[in-house]
Amino acid sequence: MTRKITAVLVATVFLLAAGAKVSRAAEAVPAALQPPAGYTVAFTAKATGVQIYTSTADGGAAPKWTFEAPLAELSWREGVIHHYAGPSWEAVDGSKVVRDMDTPVITAPAKQSSSDIPWLLIKVAADPAPGVLSKVVYVQRISTQGGVAPAKPPTRVGTKVGVPYTATYVFYIKAD
Image (cartoon, rainbow, N blue to C red; front, side, top):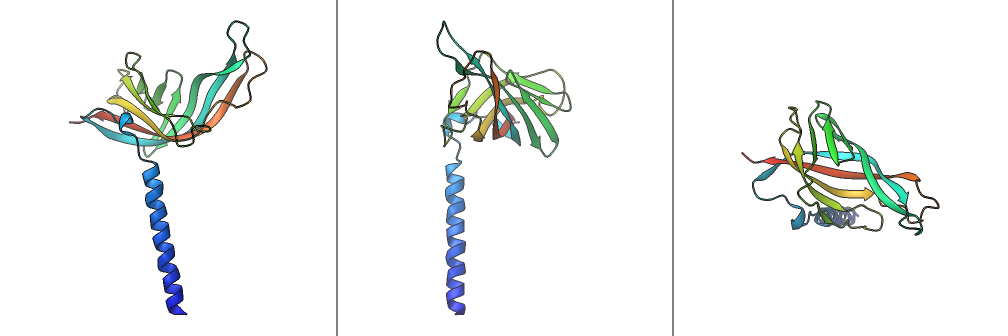
């Protein structure tokens, strides 16, 4: 009986370990979303928020959902960062980064692209205010859940919805 219990425990531990490896492998960040050589991770933050969509219509066409902006709170060991239109990230210490409009955003589909917003690599420009974000050059959004526009089209122009999402944001600085 003891041998049977031991065998079951060993098999369970093996399966759990194998599952953890598969889970980590599934979360691997695509090479296209890695910042260029010479940048290193400054910190990582977990986001909870909404992706805001507005219903629009072009030239008499049926209304459709159009992405407007994110609105999220990112938590990390040092506090909170607010994420909003721009896209922008603003720390409670007053430091801020905004997307560098001269550099295209790089995207990769999420594993569940029908329900989860894409993963991104965004080059940013820092505001002159000193603080935690003052040296950040790239922001990477990964491990997204939710946030995709509603499947059902809107019935009128001008309607706004906030679709809940979570994600991990990785902030990169120039390596010394």
